[in-house]
Image 1 (cartoon, one colour):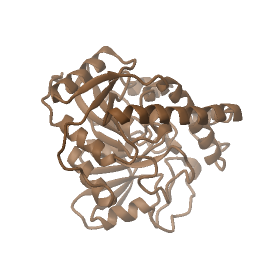
Image 2 (tube, rainbow, N blue to C red):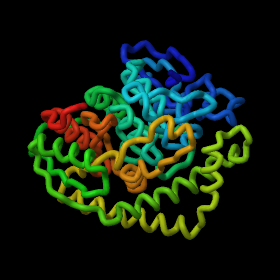
Image 3 (cartoon, rainbow, N blue to C red):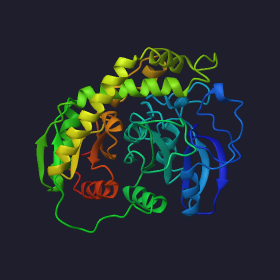
Image 4 (cartoon, rainbow, N blue to C red):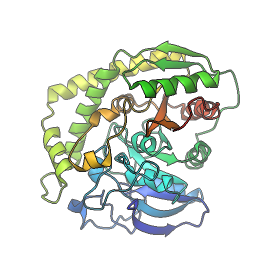
Length: 374
């Protein structure tokens, strides 16, 4: 297994953390899983999230593997090796924070720190049967994180236990305070296109919670996915200017970067207009509901064999990427698998109410397991 590509021992806490290799750790190079960055100089200082993690009493045990340049959804990496999905070994680990998720799923660490620009925390967490949180955009400081400039990217945790995830957030963010028990939260069940087994599992978990749930829709969800793709393509193309023509790049990333370079200024302007409209749509729905609920994944993840044969599936992020565009906090929680693949429920909360989102996740995680595992 290649979940950890740089073993470390920083801090003396009993709780172990792995840190995605797009995040600076002083004294070590940040290579983003790419041979193009193989000769990078060591970072001079810790990223802010690393400082906070160590100050909170956690032990950092390694730099985690990832999809090269954090620009891919499968988690495959020909240079550093691809981490094995411990719970579903025939499937991809998910990207781009593959090592952060697989290290946690394998029991190597209690928390994996990842980054999420288009689902890159929530997707591998879902693929590996874990919890993963994309906080509100800007909630956790991105200083010392690649890329230096992004209007989508968020730092966040992956954990096998929701309580472990909550404890980590409270430890690294003094503003994160779990609300006391109050009225039952109101959930909006967002109707989306997803496989029947996924829809059924999510509906059963919501019903088992006994929380008030009402059907709703986001008319701009599909368009928001397309807009988020335009933004990530332009920002990644610009952020990777130093390496995008490097012959050492993996074939899949080089191909995506070439395509990303075709994003036009008109497409970007349209995407920003759609961003504003989608934020308004989500915010309005959250005026009458505390949390939005929908599947994390619309269909089963690729098999590892299919991905290694060159198959791509960016639509696996169809229900994830829109909330990078809007900046709302989003959390994935695992459901019992069916048909041999992982199932997961995604919750989306009000911007800034990450703790309230986690409160709802806690209520749903404690609900009876209505969907039986294989």
